[in-house]
Length: 390
Image (cartoon, rainbow, N blue to C red; front, side, top):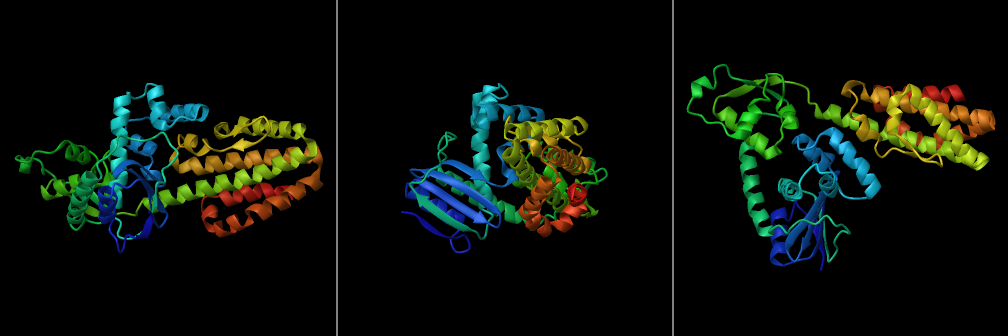
């Protein structure tokens, strides 16, 4: 039998205890703000967990820990698209990791996804009895009571550390002769790694971003180095998370806008010209890609449909500061080329009909995010094309 509630009245630890001791089978869905997690149980043991948080995706975790390079990830994704295999299976298939290492890595990844929920003080949850995901990605069962005890220990430690550490935007620096004055101090391997990231310029937030360890282990190392007098604070700086979130949001909106826009143009040409319209779209793509190599990350099928699945991932190779500009310029050029094909193939009247449909389709999305899109010149790139064609 299922149940639901909120973490503000029932703790995550209590829920785990109930499911573990009750030998329950099913899926626990937990949601807080935009973060959603699923924890799957079979006869009281944990067999799988997922998160919609990009930072907690397995691929991003592997990149952060330097267990996988971006080139290897791109190669793996290409194979995944062809075979429909999961990332862990693909890593083994390509010989990038041995099966035993992948299994251990998955166990650790699932544990960390679950431990993070112990810090949630509120959030809606629903347990659906007997409901399990249709997936082959099942790990060896984790003992729920062991996870419960370790999670409780971690949250107690985290609360103690959190009350001592300065704010996330605080810059840390190494104390001059700090190590020499504390010769009896023996650094752990994680403390030594974190110490190498402290340069008097990076904030705690930035140190965590570059750390190969999880949030607790990184915070524990910073705490230990501070208590030993080896590092200290050195002012504050603007948070980088807001900038990263902005860029991510702009990229997502940009892809949605151009995906919808180009599909309308394709439909119009296909309706009027059939396969000749599809060929016109492919020709327009090829012309635009000649001057904008970033478009090589977009896939176009034989029927003229565009696929942006790998566009964002592959474009991450571009320099961060100019990435959005390069992507926006390329997509605007692609749209311009497609609209030119519309004019030459079916005339200005039909092209104006396409523009009307485009504005109707994307108008609300653009209005809601106008200031943000203007900040990165995405808005101007798009309307430069649309206004010229009117």
